[in-house]
Amino acid sequence: MKIKDIYNFFIEAGIEADPRGKTLVDSDLKKRKRRFEALKETEKNNFDKESLTNPYYDSRIIYGDEEIEVKTAIVGIDVETPEVLLASKLKEMGKSIDLIIAHHPEGFAYSSFANVIYMQSDILNKAGVPINISEKLVSERAGEVSRSVYPQNNERVSEAAKLLNIPFMNVHTPADNCAVSFLQKGIDAVRPAYLWEILEFLNKQPEYIYASKAGQPPIILNGNKDSRCGKVFVDMTGGTEGPIQSLEHLSQAGIGTIVGMHMSEKALKEAERCKINVLLAGHISSDNLGLNILFDKMESKLGVLELLEFSGFKRFKRPIQDIQ
Image (cartoon, rainbow, N blue to C red; front, side, top):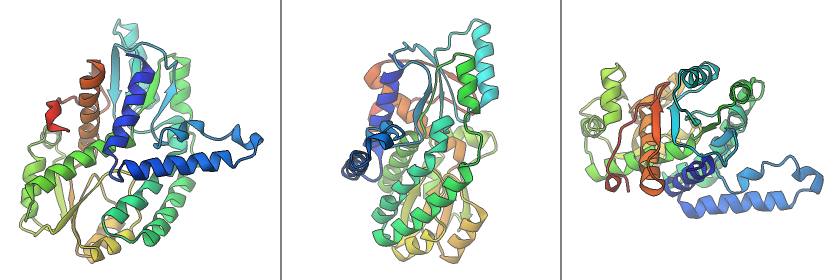
């Protein structure tokens, strides 16, 4: 398969698993097209045309010809210059590596990833927060993230890949969407009354079993094993942590438990104030879950790709019927 085949499939799978639903994703893409068409011709040159068909700013082919055939890819959660050098060294040693696939964004995908945060408006709205409130809160949060990213040196890794001539891409939100979809469906099917039932479900998944052995098991940050769940909201996609102020509105909307990847201390204190249970499945383990589901889906449609593990990625396979 070619790089473009892998990339296009990842985007399609991300849309399919998007918690907003395909109708809202299509509406978002149409809005971008209208914005693009309203620009002056001189302004269109700097417009990110890829965003007209790819709703996820944080997932891109960072370097390399999209027509390159790929038989072996090396996959990592965080891929920076040291990991690119490691891939180059492995190639020198005779290991065939056609492509680096990272999870977390680099290069342009990192520079623009704050734009992904806007999808949280619709996610919060589906959880019960009025859209006028969620839009304003998410817009403020996106501004904070954008300002923090703007002064960073974001081209280091993409330049390293270019200098070493190793094709490089990343897939962030599509993988996170897959993790959210899988976990929300699984937890809803369990219909847990207590937090221990959610823990029991998570601890059956190979990614969390592996993470537990490495000292990073799913943990309860607010509440205890015998705490009643109430309505469970799996919150793991949308670029990064959402607005802290949304927790009060989620509580008012009837959310009793949040299952997430990570949570800042400020957000945790607010969750405690709002009496929302917080259960962290784990960050890297949940990233692995999303990537593994993506690769399972890809293999069922495009064929098997040899995947090498590094930088926190561990491959676990599932039967395709378990992730549909």
